[in-house]
Length: 95
Image 1 (cartoon, rainbow, N blue to C red):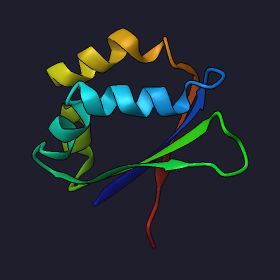
Image 2: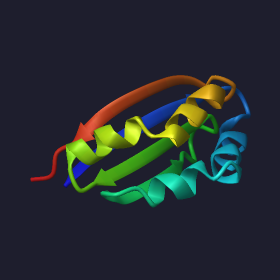
Image 3: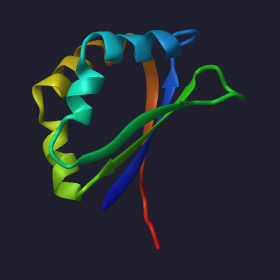
């Protein structure tokens, strides 16, 4: 299993609008239906209203890499900059 986190710093007051856009465009459903996707969930910070955490779990790193090349990910890139100021990625190593 391959697990990563993506920490988004959203533009001021844009966090919920970003999540809504990802849902309304069908991107979230498309990702969750991808081969090898185990989990793809957003978490809201109660401390920082502009912070958003994404946890992704995939059957393998290869599945996650294929995910990045999907058409719906290109669609996401088209509007991501309207909502997200900064992105930090990291791998979660399970022992």
